[in-house]
Length: 311
Image (cartoon, rainbow, N blue to C red):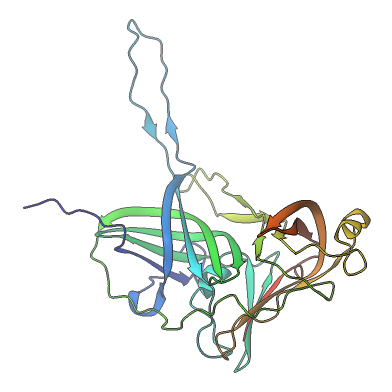
């Protein structure tokens, strides 16, 4: 019998919010499949203890495996559920990344930063015939909006892993909503309508993986312990009388950044807002021969520093 070859194309991510940290929520292909791209993984914090006794020879001794976590990375599309007020397909991932979810029935689903009460998920990763089960998963998310493409979110998630075990791929049921393109999107900085090519956001989370001598893998609860929201955008240059980008950087001016709505169909629209952005750095750029500025910014404030709303 020929040895099975694993195909990168035939992989699957399932995710479900846990009711109690670390308890397997048992996600299913029918209810919890998430459409993703560019899946990667690594063993995070893997311990291999070296043994270095003195001996009559120069030979080495076998190391001792002493526990590991697993990190899974992938990109997912930014899109709604198809029904206003119903969470999007990526909702469990957002909730595992330190965001609080607020649902207004029939109208919107809003995600805000949270400093406590962080939820966790169980994530099943099928690698064409093999299954890794991750519990107590938390992580970070990095959204990017680029003109003429669809919005994407890069997720980096860390959890307590069991497996791999041999397991066939379950039948997966995905959302049939098509993501809206990033076009016809207003973008305002302090009320000024800026012309940009792309916006990226970075949560700047610090993820702690404390040791726990009583835990099966030697690791305790994975915790989000710090956050520093930053981002970047690339506006076309303007006269100072229209928008003094450099002056605002020098003065430490704080102002709102708002994307406006991406998408035109109810149930498949979203927008970002940063109420108190301040420029951290500014440099010249060139887009098709036009002067632009590469602006890196920080987001001041507390849990209101950034909001994502699906409508």
